Length: 278
Image (cartoon, rainbow, N blue to C red; front, top):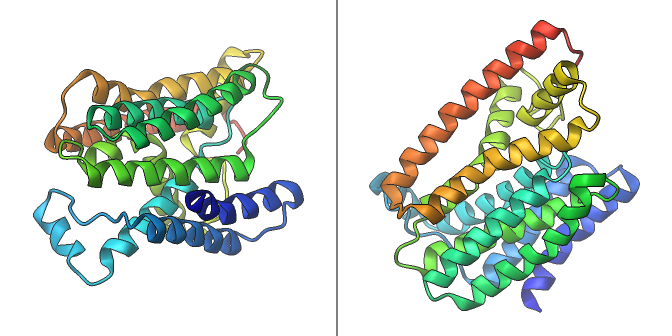
């Protein structure tokens, strides 16, 4: 019940944005931080060990573990909201990641976390099956932000309550939405644009433009959603198939980021050649 109360602020502000489309980005961010803070204070779960010495030295600063954890969960919420533009992408990736996290929690003897993960994943799967084929229902801000917060919190809980699961393994699992929001932030900032202003230069946007122009597919939205769902699910499959420690997970993150930027560059170049309007 207490966790549910913690999620209410972010669901409430997301729902208002879905209905009225007039909620400012600043106000939404405030409510996201409120929900993240409530959940952290209720659970007492904060990241104090990141396996690397310079990160751990950073986390020794007073209150920094709380700030770092709250910001991390808030970024996860915004990341899921960012990728919620294609049929099945945000919901499908949530299902894959939650089942993966549930499996990790189960292996570590954290039955309560595995149950929560699998229940939320199963509920989201029902939504995904309708959304991926028809697009008649959508997550919106209420759904995507809430899923992001839940996934962020479960990841924190697993990493701090298990011996074998590092925070880097969790970060590797959610690397696709994480790199999307991080790259978008710096791309806009370096180009002199407000970091919170929406644009059509995300990876999923470029892929949609490319497939729409090249293949004239009857449902480009769904095809793009499935394609990026498979791409974003690769880290989860690696986690479940291979016995990765935190060092291997860091290498996996680096490799994924390299492929992301190669993919992004090729798509951007192709879209510009096609002179597709943004």
